[in-house]
Every structure is written in C-alpha cells, then in structure tokens.
Length: 67
Image (cartoon, rainbow, N blue to C red; front, side, top):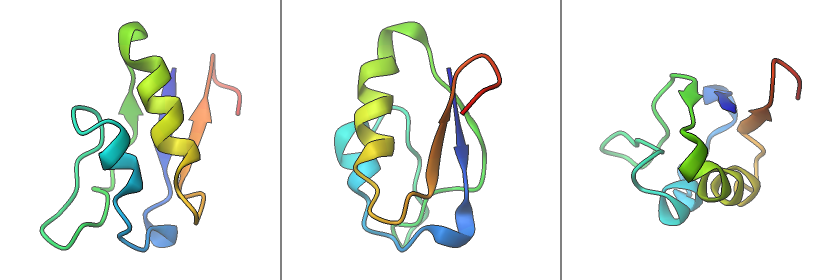
C-alpha cells in the first residue's frame, strides 16, 4: 500500500497526522510533506483512516499501483 500526496490540496488541518503521527509527516505550519508514503502492512488501517480523514482529499490510497 502506498499513499500519494497531492501537496497542492493540503490545507494544513493535520487530521491525517492525528490518526497516525508515525506515518504522516508535517512541516512547521501543519502541512503534509511532499513525498509519497510507503505504508507497512501493520500500519495500513491507520494510514487508511488518516487518508480518509483529509477533507481536501490530498491523500490518495494506492494498492498494487491502483487507486
């Protein structure tokens, strides 16, 4: 599982980070850092919850190269 970050959509709500601070890295202003995230199997649920909590849909879940 991978999460593709669409940095231009991020508004700095940090809801993703609140769900999984170990996976989602933010800058000093609360915006997600512009790097796709490879998710370890044991953290897939937290990653899914974090991505789905983004009101701007700045995080896209990809499984096996598919959205």
